[in-house]
Length: 196
Image 1 (cartoon, rainbow, N blue to C red):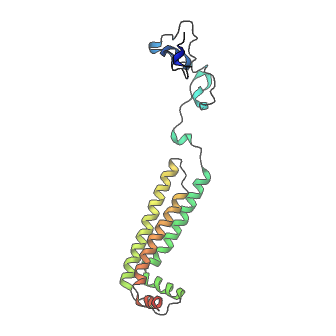
Image 2 (spheres, rainbow, N blue to C red; image 1 turned 90 degrees about the vertical axis):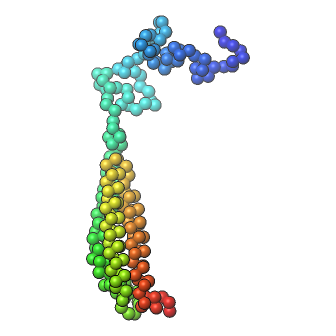
Image 3 (cartoon, rainbow, N blue to C red; image 1 turned 30 degrees about the horizontal axis):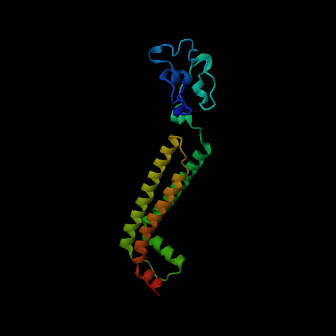
């Protein structure tokens, strides 16, 4: 018996709760049958395969459900990402280790830089150079440690990690470049060269 003013029902909107449970094969509260004479809801053992549900939800062998995968196990291993991330971290560590002696003795580094840049004279802003060179060392070391920690965390959670060493290297390099520019621009010979 339908009411012509109500229109065509859609999506079971006029169905009773019992009819809705029967349509979705959900047992009624208390385990009572939904409708007299209606087929019982299928168990996990004989549930039909649903293409919209993952395979593990249909149950394992002999009717026993498979355990639900954890977040880490659910993600496929990414060996290439892991290898690239580790190689980038190793390369970054070698770069930081080789930069530490140069920045620690900033006057020698500045003299070599001035020779390469074609600047006549000797670096004389030594006190400021040593201070900013050691700040640059600290930035490189802390930057690498933070990058390695974040990369390890991403890899342990099954996430892509190759981009973390790249971003860490770029950020560290920019900050260290600023640290090196301060004492270089404070040297009279360098300022005279660029001011000429």
